Image (cartoon, rainbow, N blue to C red; front, side):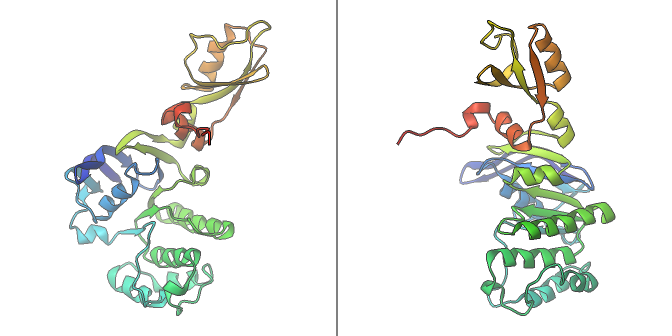
Length: 298
């Protein structure tokens, strides 16, 4: 289990992490989402032991990750900007990873060769961005980590390779109990693979819940009120309302059953609850329509 408690990390007075507290259950796939500059990459680097937090605690299975080689050996990561030696090939980097991780499996490395159609002897700097990301996954998954930290992991991969990568990751979660913390702006994709979600903004955690709980605590309803009733009643706890013709679309922070019950007092002609996507939840938790795309007059 990953636990972060009241973590603060400042750079020149700016708090990239400002009292972050979150928990990643063992064996979970935890999606960390937030706008640019929210502190996601800083959080992942702190979990890697690259940064030492100024205060608070960053622990894995109750142990601090900072200057803890035995614990770091169980953690692998793929940062957004993957590092490799300029003249190295995937095969060269394999030797480095093999010498660094005692759990590195040559058997798995050879099996994964068919999953990643790249030349292991070709210099990595001569590979495309997507092929470099494939090399990163090939090496990282061969380390057999107990904890996998991913920052924009499938950026640059084509749709087929995205499926291949997520299949490998989820197989490790199911078969080996690997714990995965993934930061990504591709919320549609996270919705398919994550079972827990945390929303980070301005260095703080706004909320963290299982995906099922998150989707159950907010609802989108399409409503048609009786003739003569053109506006949404002011006493309804609506986060956001839109209207097209006679159909009102309402976003409410409650489950569908409770929201429907509230609306029955107005004798609506139609009430239809529609599941929110993770992207919609993200937008409305960050401030509703104020965070949505703005029309700019040029």
